[in-house]
Length: 173
Image (cartoon, rainbow, N blue to C red):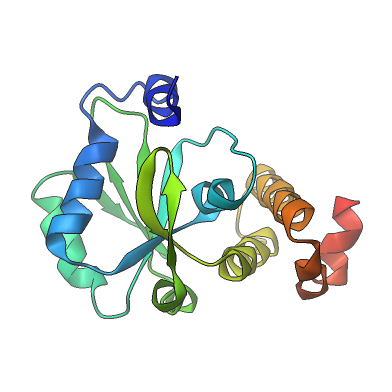
């Protein structure tokens, strides 16, 4: 079974939301990259996630949000724009935190769920996971998931261990 088929089954994606969003991004010409747990999956062993986190190049968020509203359900939050469709459990989360903007410039094409997509470099994904794991505004369970993602990154790239704050390392191993 292809990983995209499995992912679509888990997410009960009855309307090809994933493919529609990816085609929308391609056609719009907006520069973006995959970050978050799906980005971690592109470098390590994959785990199931119900969202696709992306970062967009600076200056393109408002244009993208307006266009997305014409086709999908869109909700804006403090640091993200969430995009969804009625017949899919998939959530696309567009990071609006400016710390993510430069990730797009350094992204490289990698396989993600059988698609060739721009993915943030592993060092950048690690930075994002560190930011999330230390964000006390997030639910504790969400921060635990981010710690697990940091551990997965360090398993495949132990040389990045020095970039992880001691307070987080002490919680990992």
